[in-house]
Every structure is written in C-alpha cells, then in structure tokens.
Amino acid sequence: MKMRYLLASVALSFGLFALPARAAPNPVAEFRNVQTVAEALQSGRTQHLHRAFAPAMATQVSAEQLATAWTQVSQHGGHLLKVEPLVSDNNKTEQNALLSFERAKFVLQVIWDANGQISGLWLKPYQEPAAVTVDPAVSQQEISFAAPDGPSIQGTIFLPKGVSNPPVIVLVHGSGPQDRYETMGLNRPFLDIANGLAKQGIAVLAYDKRTRTYGKTIDVTKLTIDQESTDDAIAAATWLRDSKQIDPKRVFVLGHSQGGLVLPRILARTPWLRGGIGLAAPGVKLIDLLPHQNEYLLADQVGTPQGQQHMAMIRDGIARIRDSDSKDMSPVFGLPLSYWRSVDAVDPLKELQGVRQPVLFLQGTADFQVTRADWMGLQQLAAKSPARIRFVELPGINHLGLKTEDKRGMDDYKAKRAVAPEVIDAMAAWIKRN
Image (cartoon, rainbow, N blue to C red; front, side, top):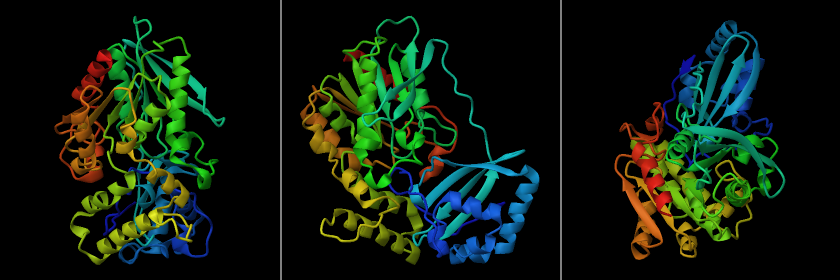
C-alpha cells in the first residue's frame, strides 16, 4: 500500500515525543496518533478514518481502497500482533509505528497537515536495522542507574580494552524518545561515536532516554526539559564517577542538538565535571529555531495558502508559549504549554557565560536544523574566551554528524552512513588535551 500526499508536512524543532491521543467524536481530533490510526485499520473503521483525511488525500484514496489495501497486507502478514510507536523525525506532523504481524513486519507512517488532517499514509515493509556491532578493541557492559526521582535508566558503557582508568564521556540525546544510540532510520550516531571514541582510549556511556523507556507512563503535564534531559545526564555522570571503572576526575558530557541546548546548565550544576562537548548545539533559545526550520522544510510551499497557514500556526504557537497572561493552557505543537515554557527558559548563550569548565562546540556547515544564525553567538563567545571555549566548523557535515549527501531536509538522514571520522577525531583530540 503506497499513498501519496500532496502537501509535505513539516518538522517542528527536533522531533519531540507526542502526547497520547484521547478519544473524540471528531475524526480529525481522534486520529492524531499513529496508534489510533493502526487500530482503526485493524478494526475495519476505515470509513471513520477516511473522514480525517485532508481533502487532497481523500480524493486520491477512497475508504474502500484503504480497506482493500489493509486486507491485502493482512492476507500477506497474518494476524496483527503488536503496534510499537517508533522514534519519528517530525514530532506531531509525522509519526511511525512498527506493525508486527504473524508472518511479516511493516512500518506505518502517518503525516498530518497544519489543520491536523491526515495528508499522507504509507505502509511499507520493515527493514531490520543492522545488528549492533562493537569494535574488537572495545568491550561493553550493560548498566543501569537511578534517576533523581526514582526510575531506573538503562544504558551501555563502552570501555577501551587494555586502558586503565580512562577518561569517560556521557552522551546526551537530542529531542524525542531516543534510544541509547540515537537511532534514526538506519543511522545510529551515538553508536558510531561510542565505538570511535573507545577505540581511541576514551570510555563512553550511552543510555536510553526516560521518554523512550517510560513514555507511556510519564505524566507529560508535569514534564520539564530538566526532567527529560538535564537531570538524567547528571545522574549518569555521577554513576560513572562512582563506578571505579574510569578516571573520576575526567568525566565529560557530550550534548547533541537539544542535549547541547542544556549542556551549559549540566556543566554549571555539576562543577566537578571536567568539561563538555556540544554537537550541533544551538546558541539561541530552541523556540527561536522553529520559524526558519519550518520555512526551510516548506520550501516552495511557503507562498501557498497551506504554507502560509502552517507558518501562521507556528507563529501563533510561539506567541502563546511566550504570553504569560494567556488563559489558554491547551497544548502547543502537541505538547503541554508548561513543557514548552520550561524549554523556552533555557538560554544557552547566557548560561554558558557562567560555566567555568572547558567546552568544545562542533558545528556542521550542512546543518539545516541549527544554522549559522543559530550558532553565531557561540562562535563569538569562543573568540572572546579562547582558553575556555573552542568552536570548530566542520564543512559538509549535517545535524547528525554525517557527511551530507546534499539531499533536502530529512531525506539527507535516510541513507545508512557513519558519523564522519573528522567529527570523532576532533572530540577525541580535545578530550585528550583536557
């Protein structure tokens, strides 16, 4: 089954996890979650699901065609056993789920337009990711540590063989319910970094984000960015310091994307950390990234009525987040207003000025998610404090640390590649100097 959508949906920020859908009589409101779409297909409620389609989509695919396509998939795969949401690129505008049938697996992808209507729906065979491989010069151990408010966080520590008390670095994810390797499609940036650094004598701790492990039970109405990212990174570093496997005086933190956003506060709140690395880290508030990110991804649709409506939605959402007098407390971009306000309270450039440890920032010139305008402040601060802050531009490197294939937007992430050697080498050289 392959159904084409006419209006490309757009990424909001870095792919935050979405709120679970609530039952509602309005199909558009009901089918805002990939789980409910899968359940409707399985239960034969295709007529009801079809009423949630955007007009252009509805004219391309009838409810009868939808039902026929699902029947064909079911005949091939057998009974549907399980629906598992997957990490998605595009927050509330795109969600994916792994559908496990008796004899086959498929990925269900659903895309919504600015009005919340379904503008794209695909069901395609699932491609098993390559097995996690560890370099022969590296050993790995499964570990767990306690987060400040109780939940157990699972991870893997990569240790260089034959090295006593190595320096160690904690990997802090970007937005969304990321696994320990930051898996996106066929790419696993954190696995590449862990293997690469461990081969150069540096231990690495990668852990599953709490929103990945406990996403179904977390009360998102009370969630803050510190609970999502900052606190668990500090807990991981503290566990390492006390583990007796590494040099407790040389514990570093690497923050990627949103992890880089909170890197300054992780360092400020944990003065015993030796230093930190920001990979694709914004030097502005995350909310300020949204307009130009969406304009870039909309491309030729910016001037269309649909594109203008989408950008108006972005502007209105930002205005609500920053309007402290607003009485409207409904979610923004699929997440609680309180969460977004905790995100908007993070001012990385201002917080970085209070950090005393050395910091390295690595920024790819092919990054469309954090562009030159977003990191210029970091570069300028580095020029003023060269002994403490180092800033390195990496030509042709995208947001994931991969050599770009010169494809537009999220398509650049789809091919299987490894994090570029120059990215890992720059990290290793800096850690060894500090």
